[in-house]
Image: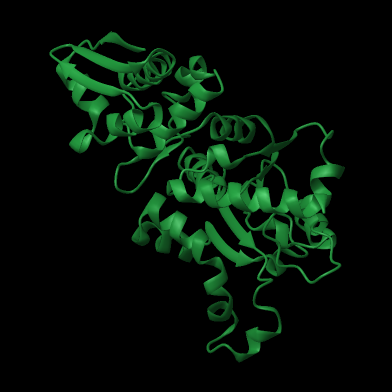
Length: 322
């Protein structure tokens, strides 16, 4: 049985934001719930099966909540609201608004886009050491770099140190051209990219020359005490237990650490236990250390990334049952 529901839209600019370019936002709603959406003046009319119309109305009201808070909608945010409606958790959406981590060199605000990312950011603010674990595309590294840049700009720390293990290089390092730094740079590229985006290439290079920003392989951390620093260890699933312990014990006075990794994508030799997996168990009850798990719901890359992660998780579940 077809039914209709009318939703009031306060202003025309809100209706424009709701529908998006070429009506792309509302088209996602229509496809998801098999309803028809028509905007007339200050009203949006939804037509379809009663249950689907009710769900679509909840999604539209969730999107309007974000618009009222000044958030710009895109494909990812629309699909996230749909996921929240599916879980009956759309009333939590206002918690996503208003939290700007920092502003990029191009003036773009860096904000958490999911509740999982929001929890991750809050954990970094409230704890000295944070372990952020989750699949690709959940913003683990990017948000951590944003928090580091914000702390550096606010003069809360004097240095930003970003590091990751060059596990993929292995014995092949010697065959690559250039000096040691040039050999390992390809493995540090994602960290450079995030810093370039936040600070601009010119500012980054100046700070790097001054020694206030350091991007280096994990091996360079041995024997050091890192004071007044914001330290990020990326791709930590590729550390050994010994390397992880070495890294964590570099923590100095007035410093903060963020460790990120994806335990489903390990490149360690067979039989080697991941330092990240080990640390998650060993440190889970230690005060001032937070372990945050992000999931496919927190993926903010292309929507297919979520589908790919789900497909692999399904396959792994089937394999474990055999």
